[in-house]
Amino acid sequence: PVKISGITMLSSKSFPAFFQTFFRCPEKDSIAIILIIGIAIVSSLMIIANPGFFNHDEWDKADHVMRHGFGGYVHDYVRLQQTLEFGHPIRPVSFFIQGIAALFMHGYPFVVHLMDVLMHAAVGAMFFVAIRRVHENRQFAWASAIIFLISPLAAFSVAWPAALMDRLYILFGLVAFVAAYDYINQKRTVISLTIVFIASSMAILSKETALILPATLIVLPLFSLISLRNKRLWVAFVVWCIPIILYLLYRAPALANSVSGAISTPYSASLTNVPEGLIIYAIYPFL
Picture 1 (cartoon, one colour):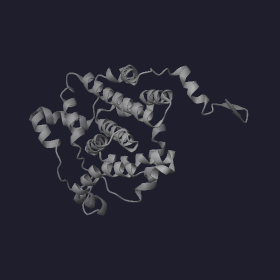
Picture 2 (tube, one colour; picture 1 turned 180 degrees about the horizontal axis):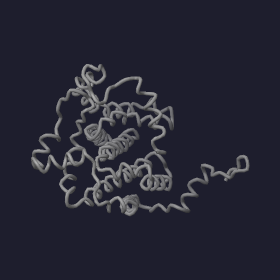
Picture 3 (cartoon, rainbow, N blue to C red; picture 1 turned 45 degrees about the horizontal axis):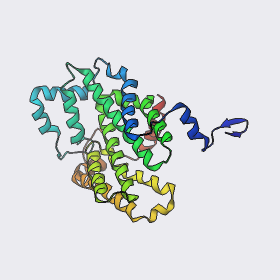
């Protein structure tokens, strides 16, 4: 412990010891991941037991499945298509899973919420794996994953079925990060880059926000500026960016319309939105 102004704080050396007392991480990663899934389910039992409160977007998908069948839904939603403006979501991966969830909304709402919780558990497991890659202390990775799983800040995304898009693009982003880290550290080569490419593709087809995910590789140079000289880091970065660039090129006409204001859109782009947006995002967790 280090005393600063009369306040006892935990130093970096005693920090792991603190977590060893309250968070016992299993010795095997496989057991840790199984427990992470169990903790996610137990801590989210109230969400799973929700009798089924769904919003307009979710009922819209369920109505489409009921009227046109699952095949008709897949034809209309699970494909790339041009739109007039970028605010119209094109998310084949997310819409496919949302269509499956829609099959259970009427009679078995707990299945929908269980799917949400299992996605949350998968993100928690990959979060644990990612931290284990960049941090030698497994207790730190374990505690971080548990805090993430039970955090009230994550509850809103987990309890809201339509937010599966946020869970999915983060899940695939973590997969891409782990694969990129393995490639950069020469643990794997072509296989790792292939996983980075596939995971990046799945992420950008889950939600457009995934276009910022390659920036997570900046974590590595932060640990050591020498990493900037590592050609493997830049190769992984480029491979991660390729699906994103292809997606943006495909949707360039819609993006141009939204930015230029050539057509009226519900999501108009303007620099005047930035100050208000920063304030809203800053206070949102405390609302």
